[in-house]
Length: 202
Image (cartoon, rainbow, N blue to C red; front, side):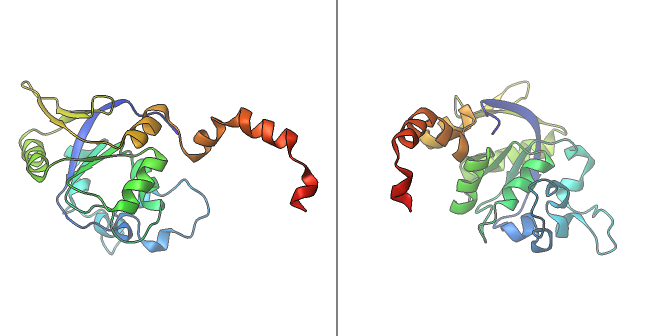
């Protein structure tokens, strides 16, 4: 897992609340047993018209959001089923962090385990970001996990502090997923295996 300490990128806004995982990555794309390949189908039902063409009315298809790496959205993002594919799709599309007033618990947990930073800000702060993005095309922000701060990179910077679970923060900063956490104890595991009598497991 790639460590996350600080990231600067273009902000993209998705002005929708209660976005569930089936909207993030529709169920018809869950047949693959491979982890790559989900990003191109992120928000497929919204991004694409019935004839397969790009939907010009969908926010993230706007040219001004091309190359955006920080997604800002509304409350209860990631509700619905527990599919990790939703997190993978967001990451593979290019987003490094998602900012919202609240997240569904399972989505937030899956994000932390896969290296996607979820930032919870007050509704009033998220609304201010929406206003600034609407006012300044190509607006960039810096998300600093170490300082737990989101900064809008304007002439007069605007910053917002966010809370973060200390354990999740440590895992993200050091790039530790479940395998990485296990490997931290490799010496202890090896010592146990060396002493373990294989007859006991039969």
